Length: 88
Image 1 (cartoon, rainbow, N blue to C red):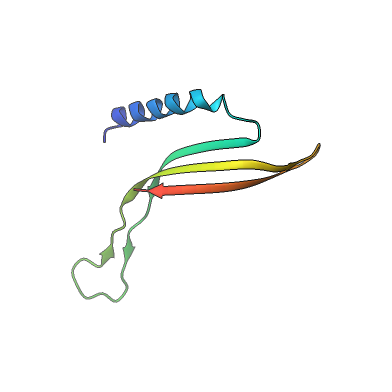
Image 2: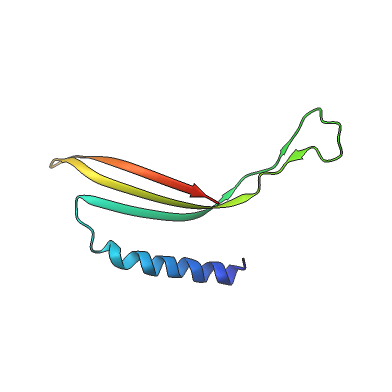
């Protein structure tokens, strides 16, 4: 995927997600993150074959967090959160 296509997709996601976010209830919060995961290759110590590397590759990561206020006070708030991560 080229950088131009990546920026177009990122802007489209932001545009689609930002309009419903203003209609959220004050007790519920929803957040989303789109990112790239970089994992380095690892060498195998003591290997006797010609290519002693384990290649993991790079992934595209989607994360969604849902949070709800359970107890609110004048100086603090306690909330429960459910994070969900999906890595391609």
